[in-house]
Amino acid sequence: MGATVRLRSDERADVTHELVVLGGWLERLRGLLGKGPDARPVMLMRCGSVHTFGMTYPIDVAFLGERGEVLSVRRAVPPRELCSCADAFCVIERPAREGEWLVEGEHLWIVAISAC
Image 1 (cartoon, helix red, strand yellow):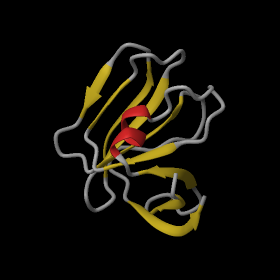
Image 2 (cartoon, rainbow, N blue to C red):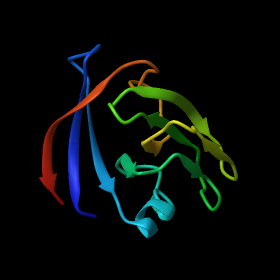
Image 3 (tube, rainbow, N blue to C red):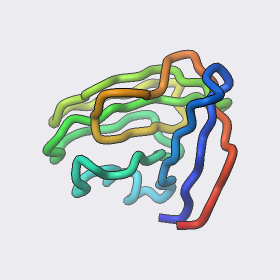
C-alpha cells in the first residue's frame, strides 16, 4: 500500500473520508478480502467493478467518475456478488456499516495525501 488520501465533498464540506489507495493489479483484485469488518476503507484505482467472492461480511461500494463525481452507490453488498459501473474510473469500498457514506451525485476532492 502506497498512500492514504483524505477526500472532501463539494456538497457536504463537513464530511471527509480517509482511504487507503490500492493501485496495483493484485492489490485491487484483493481489495478488502482477508481483512476484518473493522478494516479501513480503500480506493481501487482504474477500476470499474468489484466482487465479494471470498468475503465473510457485506461491503459498501461507491463508483467514482474521472472528475470525482459519485456515479453509483451500493450499500451492504453481500458476499458472492459482482457489481460494476461502466463509466467508473475508481471504486471506494468499506466494510458495510450504518452512518455517513457517499451520496450519488456528490463531487469529491483530494484534500490530503500521505504515505502509508
